[in-house]
Image (cartoon, rainbow, N blue to C red; front, side, top):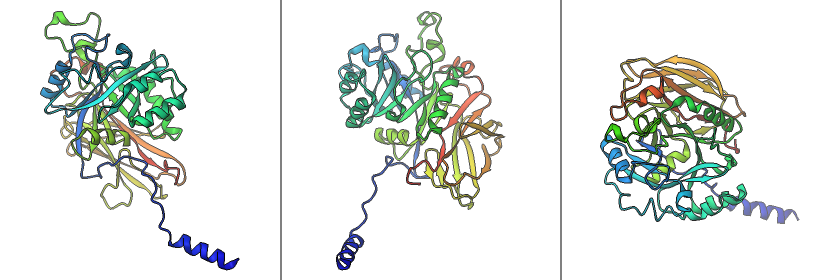
Length: 384
């Protein structure tokens, strides 16, 4: 009996351990990626509630304004789920300089969600289960290999499905920042519950920028103050490709700014006190019980000439407020994440808007809200 047990122990010792399945897609390290800016919620003429907005107009605007990627996400219920033969097959769905994600707005009686994919997928399958139980929808989502995001989670078309089946949440919808307070609260509630969900933006633009004042949509901010990049979602990607954009979005390597000219905010953490960051937004590690120094860095806009107010949120509660150094565009704070307890840190930035000449009216609707970061996480992995 002893010999048998020893033989079994020897066999186990000789068997190489099975590598754990990666929990996140491949992402850039702290210093070898590229920042790409885009818009993740746009409607073209294929959405029945959209006007003056052919795909060529959206893409041409994105190209001339310097965007790196966009997602045209038309309502799937307007074409009975057949997005592939409407939005994607449109001869205008092409660009030499802007990465075009494949997607749609999954529009159901229980809420709306955006799909993002680096390649064409069978959206009809997702559309066909829109009234099914969450578990069945999740199975289809996994089979399709898509990124599913909860759109405008509060208000009239709130997201009424389980947040366990989405990869991100739209926390900044349109240029009207004030309408997003409830969405931010929901995001914090989901994070506090242990869900590692990426916060993203999306203009939800339905109408093209008017070529003449007569084309403006009556009683609407959409046509004069909300278009591509209000807000702008930045992703820190491994390279300039559609798959790298989706991977970065899934892993939370994301920040959002009110417009493409406003400063981009980055949140990083120095774990060992050597003055070099070890983590950035979206990253997760085990808390050691030692103090961690966090750096908030603003890039672009007036980041190195003006002072901005940074508000730090820890675990859904206000932690502190700091002012960036106009000479460096940075601010620092220190805290000691508790061992064995989930915790996260994120920031918002307020200050004077940087003009967006193509959409000048957007500045007034965004107010003093400039940017927000995704969290840095501690002890979120169940293996910790």
